[in-house]
Length: 367
Image 1: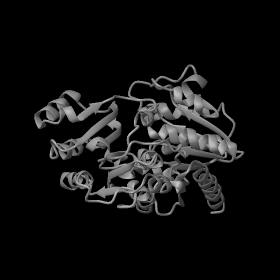
Image 2: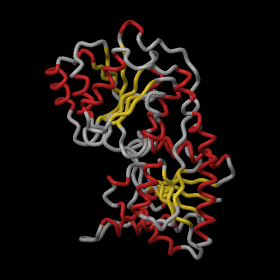
Image 3: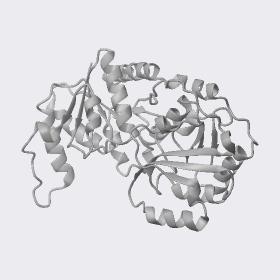
Image 4: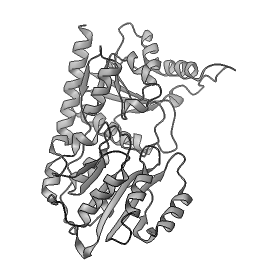
């Protein structure tokens, strides 16, 4: 089967890019002809070299059409996308990463005598996609969490949906320093520094309530949106916890730096399927995460491999941290955490993708 993955601009530093690489290569190994098309080159597009076949519309169509004065941006993107698609072999299936792209791709299916099957492949909660209405242009949907499947049941109830999740590599077992080594518990945050989605305000206020207790917080990632580091530094200083927070910035291999068993913290208001949870568990670390509407509940069994709390609740988040610091909760073993993600290992999830795409194509073509 010839499968084309289409996406607008991707930053090159997110979990979505990692998943696209893993699934593309896994499906290629299973005999599918995989390709990836995006509108233009991002500042960081090195990740696309790991794909079986990556293309940029701006390269395929060097003289891309410039917008006419007053022309809607949608029309410009549509015409340039169609110009690029005309140069490519007809795919059997198109997977669309962003909600709005489904409208562009659906309008492009007229290029083909036998239109490809268009499947959406969203990587975030549907409720935060302003253009989620465009998902109805897809023939069917791949849902990366059970929460997103439920959202599709409300948004587009007539279309078939398959839950595929996302894959995690089976991490090599390494020896970690114990959680309570030297009397200090290490907490880790990996991801975008973002107040809107990731709710770092909840995280910092929670830790501020535990000033002076034996913890340290390691922050790895990069700023996003309206994030203001100077304001954060001021808050941490005023709260008296600056010395307990370590900033390491963006790291190509963050887990390679963590040699002590740690607790990953995730305080998001919404997610799709936060891969960082699986990455932590696969290495034997623990997780404290918000019970946001899509993602964490598929991975965390509270008390068995981590703990959940109500999104936005500083009090609950603080209590989860305190319970670990005070030895109130039983700490799952490294092996228990590692074993808890076996279901999501790459080859197993890749099989699920292959089967789900094939069954969706069959169902849609026989409607």
